[in-house]
Length: 139
Image (tube, rainbow, N blue to C red):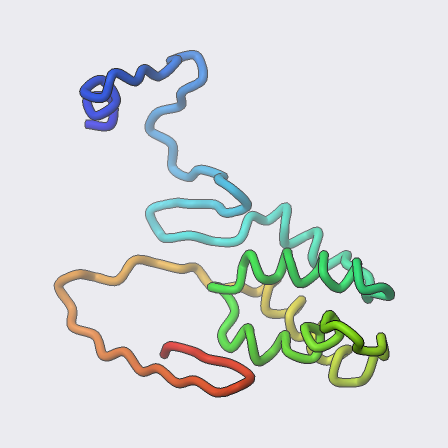
């Protein structure tokens, strides 16, 4: 099916670079399988070894990684808020207990992230949303 779609659009796959019938695939920092999508274990290891940020650049780097995986972390925006506040213009870099708690909790949630699975289209769902000045979410 995929090969036919490629052919229909005059695109061709180089078979020496193709892999077929895989149980799971590592792709852009995720591992995708029939069970769902998980954070790549190599990224989890990097998160566990991440040292406490000491500069604005280090905070931005950590938030960049964590933000990439935000869909695995419930209430990400709210949880990351103390660290995000440190990246604002004219904000003094002062690492507080709130920052430490935020950093450690983000690391914990990234290293224990759930498997994201597609919903069953035959089931019905109710979606709840909320928003505030600090965060928004869908439940």
